[in-house]
Image 1 (cartoon, rainbow, N blue to C red):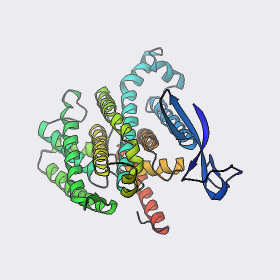
Image 2 (cartoon, rainbow, N blue to C red):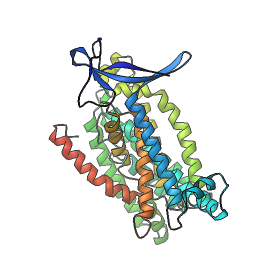
Image 3 (cartoon, helix red, strand yellow):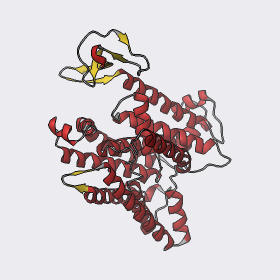
Image 4 (cartoon, helix red, strand yellow):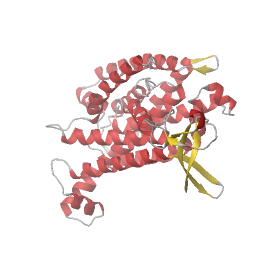
Length: 386
């Protein structure tokens, strides 16, 4: 592993003379006003990649925060545990009551929160990057609503309780079918003249979101009160009573979906600069966009199936990651780590900051709605309008 300085934004070659005042850490100004970024290069034989130092440090910071949220979730609650008992309980070396609380009551929920946030962060980054629109999150363009509608149909049709592990299988299947169907419909309706525009994609998605929300409400109105109560509790975005069944679902889904996303990193980056540039660099834009949207849709469906619609995370996490990393494009996995921190922290607040435990989706909504208003106001001030 080596650390070097590599040009960003095609800065001219030359000697780096001074650190640019007011610029991001690791960014320098060379002759001609170009920027040069400190870069860390990883190589193992013929395989290697380069990563900006600030992006790497941001990832490390976010991982540390996610781990801190995980440990705090294990220690805090109605039954407080000393930090030492949490650590020993994780390795089955502590008091018996500490091991029970850590392994059976809190660890599954905390792990699901972290993995759900990671999946939503990745999904939001994919949608915003591919459409080049910061409002194109899966919960804005109807993907989450489609997953929710499909999962609710599975819950109501099969009588599946959201915390019953033995019959949990139909829920992610219904969410996947609903999300993929919605994604395909929105994609083809927004497709014009060989491409899609960010505004068109968002507008079609908002319309689809409204129809799916109306369908879900209609379905809830036609079933008995017990089934409707179960489904409504799930629709708020809740991690209550999560166990290792959901942990296994999330882990398996991420193992299947992250490798294709890694393989699509180059098209993901190139599409953020526009179709003309991506095509000029040899990227098959239509196939790459379709593949990325399919993976992003499946990630959103996976998260929604395990936790319900946890709103605003996929919208905010990519912008948080871009702001912390100081990059023009959205750093993909940094957005995933940011999502993990947001959901992990929100779930901790949901369990400890209120007189009674509230669904995590309510906490993310309370945080995300003001963020969306601020973001729209800021975008309008600088003339970007979303």
